[in-house]
Image (cartoon, rainbow, N blue to C red; front, side):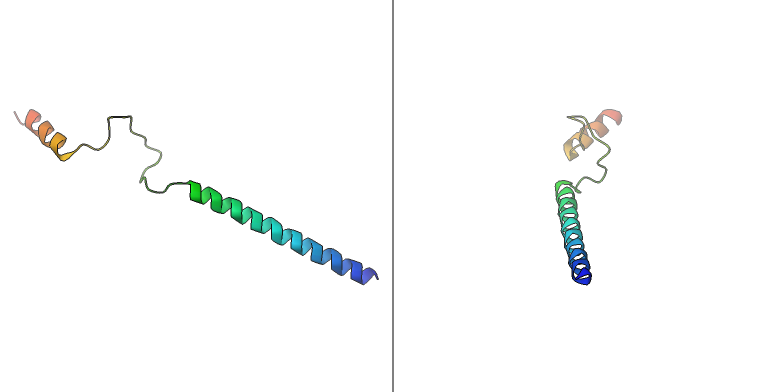
Length: 67
């Protein structure tokens, strides 16, 4: 009888462990899905209006300093 109770307790602990690992993996997947990997340097933020210059802006800047 004690053997049956011990086996049932071990099986219950295994099931609880599997459920915990499954929930942790789901939480980790949700965190990864929420993170955007498109920006090459996410720590460097440019203020509004200070993005990458267009080709016309670069040409205008060259004309001003070319004099």
